[in-house]
Image (cartoon, rainbow, N blue to C red):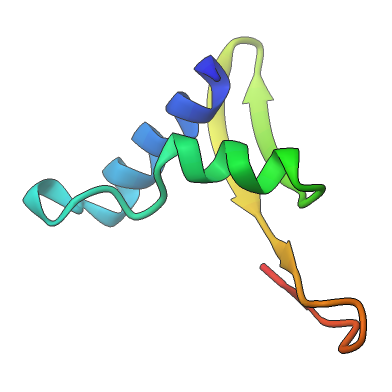
Amino acid sequence: MRSLTAVQRLYEGVWRSGRAGNPVAADRLRALARSGNPVFGAFDGDELLGACFGFCSPPDTANFHS
């Protein structure tokens, strides 16, 4: 969960969401990851440099969104 919180903070800094709220909350990223969707982080040592995530459509449509 620590890495997902780091992703949340990274997105908050990039999108400068401030009081509008976080663009992607760590708990939502965790739910995506636990349900089989990809959540990736790019690290230099312990420093998170970037991140991305995606989610799949229902099986009958075979689409992927990221």
